[in-house]
Image (cartoon, rainbow, N blue to C red):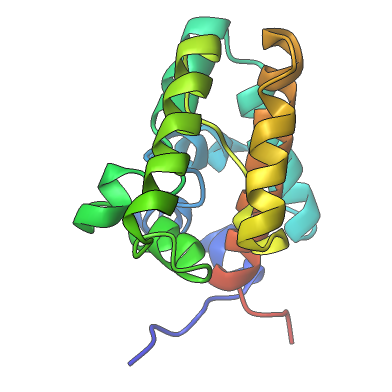
Length: 175
């Protein structure tokens, strides 16, 4: 049975622990983002909440940003095959069955993941909900050609889209 989704009005006035419990997983392994925006309540709307959360990320010094990025699982990586991802990531990657690839296809993803991590120092991050397997692979190969600054920016852009979708899933429309 699904947990009832609260409204933004409920989250604007609930105890801090409930706010963090509801929104703490919007950003992968980073409940501190929800904690950081608590003092900014009440939020006028979900886009304002999301913008506040993103501003927390944008203010991070690079070492902290890298820690955040490194908290994301590799696409079709070992954690996916072992079933060791967060529920959100498993669902998102599961849409394309990235946990269940044929050996040759898994090897291709593994090669790309290793090359990307070697080049940039963090995993390739992509809002998989906007892609097919083929378009995800094409994006992966294309983004390997970028410089690190471009990839840091694109990783944050992808996280912004992933987190926006996760917020939408967690909150019901205001009545």
